[in-house]
Image (cartoon, rainbow, N blue to C red; front, side, top):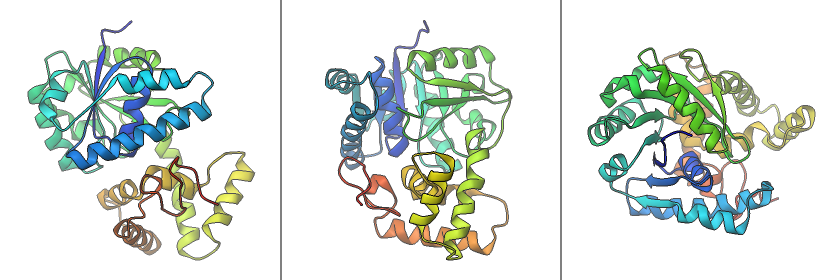
Length: 294
């Protein structure tokens, strides 16, 4: 058993809410932080949906266990108290380097000298962030897949200054939280999963922008051929277009014209309140339980 009993998840958006609730359901005390009262209210709705989905999709999730998960959760807008109470902090704020660094400056100043620091990013390296925490030796990257309760991997990536004993502790904690740790030897931008998945999503974006087929047909083709339950546009809705746009705009690589066009379309969808499943609409429309409306 690890010494970890209290986890703080910083950022309770689409993925942060999943991380927080799955860990709370596993029996840990969890503080979920977000920026303001409106964000906290939105997180409560996400927790309710996640609980319902877990009961539908997991044999071991029951009304009683989901109720206990809710009891283990505390929501707050007080970043200082969230940091002070944590044995482990998992940061899941938007994919913007300066925002993550400024958040870690505050967290590092408030947390205890024994707290383990983890950042959940899609494309950033720990070595770009770790020093902002003031304790790069206790700093790692942890990357979760959407629908954490089913796709329950957590990629654990040390940065060059990480003391590997903390990597080992996080690996053991992941198992205690009903997660499957995937331990990496060294830093790799986009980890293992996104290194493999991003080219697949970009291929679908290319087909869409060039009007080769409708999104439903692209998704259908992939799902049937690859025996999977989600196509690329369903996956992008689950991830959320804000994250996809943030990653695209944070890239230092020259973007081809079709990619620029896809990002422009995604930004218009966000402005219209259609950022993905979390908004109830993205490429598809969703009901109150997060299921696609056919």
